[in-house]
Length: 177
Figure 1: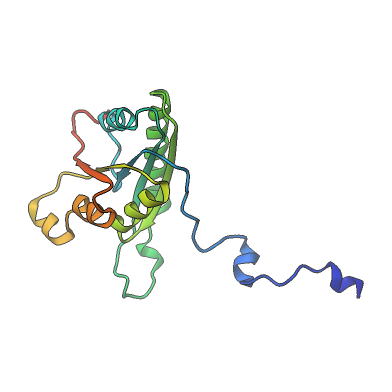
Figure 2: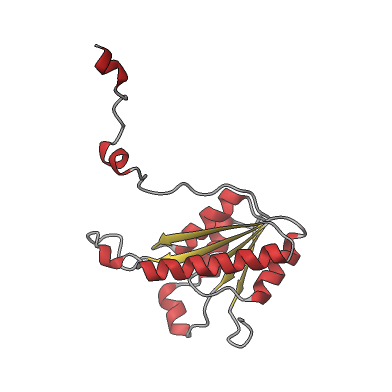
């Protein structure tokens, strides 16, 4: 009897408890005034300056998207997930942005999200953090690609509604570093 009393109660999902990981990480909820969102590009210093100025002393959050390729209707394939190298690049972008934001005197939070739906993930991060402004860093792309993939800034603005101001910025090739 004493042996059964020392056993832990069974976990709700034995495989997850065996490996010690949840399937997905929880959305960070630290509040921020401004959210800088990137779809994988390095965040220009000019965007960081604008975000710190817009925050007026409040916290600034940074979210970068590591793209998952493929369709949601297909079979899961690990080859469609971002590679370790891609994830490390995104972490480096976030760490550099946080370093520059803190150097400018504002509090900063960072996150790397792997997703198929960039607009939905950016909107969820904005809602979770309670931001008033979202700055989306998006690459300069041809018109046909925007027609096929959609306009990320408009999609994020549509999901967030009129209470959150969403601005799109294309990184200047000369002024990024």
